Amino acid sequence: MLTIITDSSSNITAEQAERLGIIVMPLTISFGGKEFRDGIDIDSDGFYKMLMSTKEFPHTSQLYEEQAEAAVRKAKTKTDEVLIMPIASALSGSFERCERVAKRYEGVYVYDTKCTSAMLAMLVLKAAQNARKPMGEVIKILDAFRPKIKLFAALDTIEYLAKGGRLSKLSALLGTALKIKPVITIDGGGKVALVSKQFGMAKSINYIAERAAKADIDYGEPVYLLYTADDRNCSELIRKTGIKFSEKCNICPVIGTHIGPFAAGLVYAER
Image (tube, rainbow, N blue to C red; front, side, top):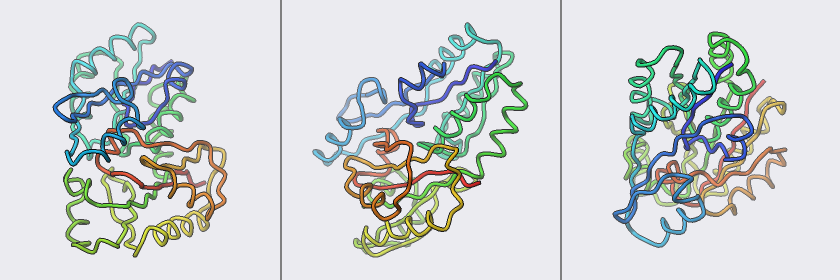
């Protein structure tokens, strides 16, 4: 039996964590000279209200080793084997900090999820479903499942990605063409990647709807609709795809910091 640890970028809810025995480590957002623990001191609704009411740019922090250490110790009281599944190593140094902690313990493994947000939630839930299997078998299941998970998100602005340094190439490509709305994904290496540039949000949403229509979606797995701050664009995506979704999520603050408001996205697994 494994105990699974993840971080708050996964959008795993408190109810899911309690029901499945998952330990969620909160990431930290610095805003207005104050630090907020994602999902504890601030929720998504409160965060986006702050984001849109100030010109100040928030900053995110990596996991502290002390956080990972405390989570591992808690997990070890439940099971001998522990699987840590943080945000992609390509997106944060949290993975390296978790690895340093894991090396101090027997039976603790850190898995590079190469994703975040609802993609990470899908991986974490898949691990939880198989938690009674040996560690090696669970890793093989995750390795096979990760390439099947697809994310497409239309952004209303590139301002936050540019400020956070997460997509500098995209900034160069788009320049000052304010009406161009990018569609991004998380690639196989766990990096943010541009997949399309469209003139206007409506066309970006059309692009995602067309990709979904062509995909062989596995409805035996969760299907997530994502939004930031306001679900108006997400609702339009629902209307255009007619897709059967499991959950509609207001993306957590630590990811919203880099995406900004009014984004709309879709996450699913292909067969």
